[in-house]
Image 1 (tube, one colour):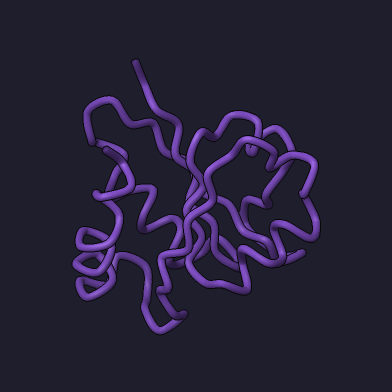
Image 2: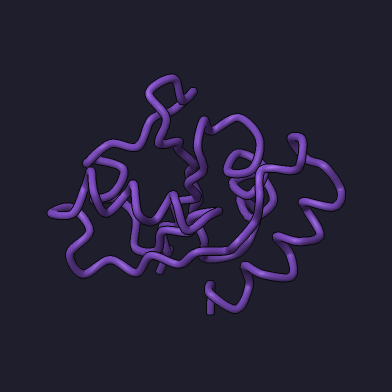
Length: 108
């Protein structure tokens, strides 16, 4: 059985696409990523939220924005904040290590 995991940050350019790529090869996990900003490369949509079983946001502000904009689409969804600040580039080794430390416990 495949578990659908959605990673969310602001613009879907650095943190969430890195997380999507890092965990894409994990057995039993299917990943996607999206952003909450109006200019996000791949914006969060009701369809993405319906697809996701687990939603991992990078900052508390993302969880708040997600709840404010998509409250009705989050019923029954698990939303976890990873507390990863916007201090990293795409596939930055420090970001990858941080993700590998924080994410796996939520994928079990």
